[in-house]
Image 1 (tube, helix red, strand yellow):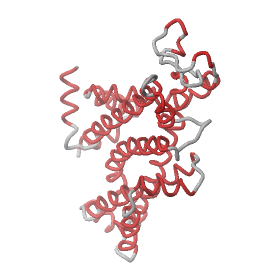
Image 2 (cartoon, one colour):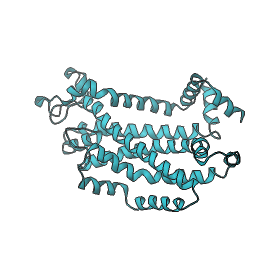
Image 3 (cartoon, one colour):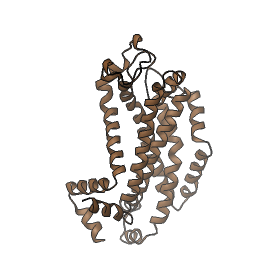
Image 4 (spheres, helix red, strand yellow):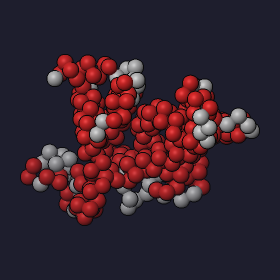
Length: 306
């Protein structure tokens, strides 16, 4: 209890230092976080700096092989079937890939958590009807549902975000509901009721902070899943369409050239693999760092390293 109060009273600088120490204690998670930071920077600034270079065609350099230092830094990973350099295209494609995954995870987490809080805390009809809604959505395979909807609608970025967000809502709904059902019986919640706190204050001030770390851990894992789902849809040809680009679309465009130009699909595929791997490593670290009963492992590791 004393440690919790000390942590709550720490200034922002002290919290940041503690966070970095815990992250440094797990080297895999640290380097995963650095890689994800680079990906986010590419997604934010890549199109502003490299969009012209990424779309510039050079038919004389069609399917140029990688590691040709004489061709310049932009051609270090080779070129595609229209002679466009792959490195700038991968950097620019990060924006759509991350935007789709972040948008789908954000909205599914927001809606699913809200419904889960209502279903878990309410004792009325909502507590029975909301879980059934999640069961209905989960009765359809998420990728199959996305394929059907995107086959009917125009495969745009907004439609892909909406479809993937809907398919992921039950994950957060079920998790939030299960957590709330357990937390609402704890002593501090009962004490808040006795003190006359409103239901809204109890849910958002006392219950949500306890449930949120679990949801954030799941969201980190779900981010990787949504990235793979978007890449699968683009690979099937019903995801984001040219001239927009994503890593999944780049893998799809390189499929006809796998026998004689493997690098067209390999580099964007490697970007997908490294990003999902980093998200999984960071999620595992978050699961430990956000759990007071497990955090001592990281603290002990940080002391040994120090």
